[in-house]
Length: 194
Image (tube, one colour):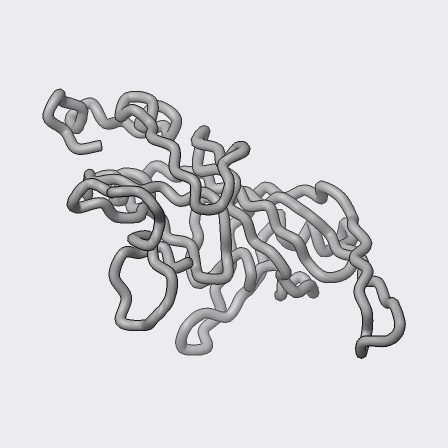
């Protein structure tokens, strides 16, 4: 699903969900089409700049499944930062981040419809304070692994928890600001949008 309400291209959009959103609702910190997980929606246009464009960094944590077994050396390159390619073919050095291996998993499948095969995959968490240029996917690729799944599990203290795909959880404005660690004293008023 696209994390937007309007698109020039056909496909599932946020408006396809069985919920009536207030006028002016928009996504904060979009997910690309091949990613899944926590997506924040609000009618308050100032939240995006407070969360992703301010001088105060805000953490985003992703659960990532990659092909093959990732070793400590590759994990360390993610943690210390590495070069990724961005638009225009330029290199971008990622800043240090938090990363840890959660588990290894063996996937079994039928190869060419006849014989069974298996593939070892690695699940890891990566916590960043930025998310530029499809950064997580490019980081794990630069570390020698292909991203198979990418799930955003939290933004600051706002967690995906047991929320299922397509489910919506209403969060009161004060709790929303508190869990996102936003200094919004000038934004909170009885008439402020949610």
